[in-house]
Image 1 (tube, one colour):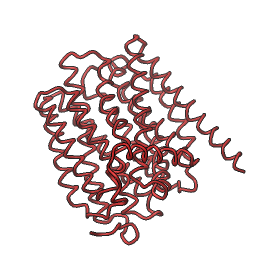
Image 2 (tube, helix red, strand yellow):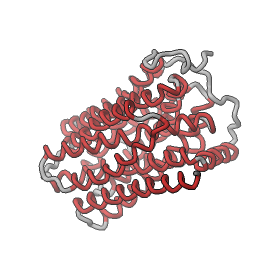
Image 3 (tube, one colour):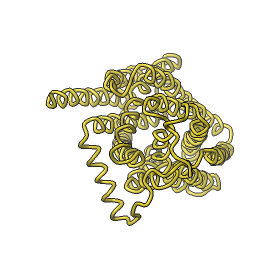
Image 4 (cartoon, helix red, strand yellow):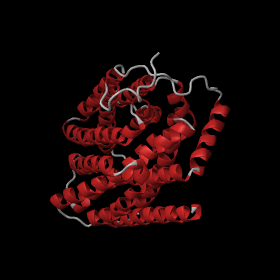
Length: 402
C-alpha cells in the first residue's frame, strides 16, 4: 500500500489530476441534477416552498451523518471512499430517473455527497504539500465552479427540452466520476483501526468539534465557511423565484445562467486568493465577505439581464476570494489536530446546519408571501452584517491574546 504523496509529487501529479477530474464530473452531476429535479417538481405542480425543501432533505443527510463520515474518510483510502460515494450518488439519480419520488432520490444523492466531501477535501492534504495547499484548494474550487457553471446550465437547458434526458445525463456524469476515481492511487488510510461503535464514533466526532472550536483559527474558518455556503445555497433558490419577478422570464434555463455567472466569478476569485493570500494572511479575505452582502443588495434591485450578469460575476469573485483561504486554513490545522477527514466532517456539520437554518427561514418567508426583491435585499444586508460581526469578533480575540 502506497504512502501519502504530498512530500514528493508536483502539484499537478497523476493523483491530483484524477481528483480534479473526478470532482468536476461529480459536481457537474450534482448541479445538473438539482435543476433537473427542480424542473421535475415544478412539472408535477409542487408548491414554490417545496423547492428549498428538496435541498433541505439533501442537507439533512450531512448533519445526520456528520459524526461518521469523517472517520469513514480517514479509515480507508480516500480515493476509494470517493468512488463509493459517487456510486451512491449514481443510485440516487437513477431513482429519480426511474420516476420514483424525487425527494427520496435526492436524499440518497445527499448521503453520497456527505460521504464524498471529507474525502475530496481531506485527500488534498495527502497529495499536496503545505506550501501547495492553498493552490490545491484553488484548483479544487476552480474545478467545482466550472462544474457548477456547466452542470447548472446543462441541467436547466436540457430540462426545458426533456426532463428525462436531463436526468439521464446526471446518471452518466456520476458513472464517469466513479471511473475517474479508479485512477486515484490507493493511499495509506490516515487513521486506520478506529472503533466503529456508533456511540464511540459520536463521542470522537464531538470531541473533534470541541477541539476545532477551541482553536481560534479553525473556529474562524468554521464560522466563515458556514455563513458563506448557507448564504450561497439560499441565493441559488432565491434566483429561481427572482427571475420571473424581476426579469419576466419563466423558463428553467435563465436561473441556471445566472448561477453560472456566480460560478465564473468564483473561478477568478479563487485564483486571486491562491496568488495573494497565504495561510499566515487568511484574514485578508474578510473585506470580501462583507462586500458579498453589499453586492447581493445591488443585485436584488436589477431589472436587466446584462446588469444582473455583471453583478453576479462580482459576487462570485468576492466569494472565491473569501472562501478558498478559509478552507485551506481548516485543512492545514485540522489535519494536525483531529485528522483531515474529521475536520472536514465538522466543517460540513457547521455549513449544512447553516444551510438548513437559512433554507428553512427562506421557506417560511416565501410561505408568508414576502416580496422576492425585498427578500433579496434583506438577505444581502444580513450577510454583510454577519461577516462584519465575525471580523469584529476576530479583532477582539486577537486583542485578548496580546
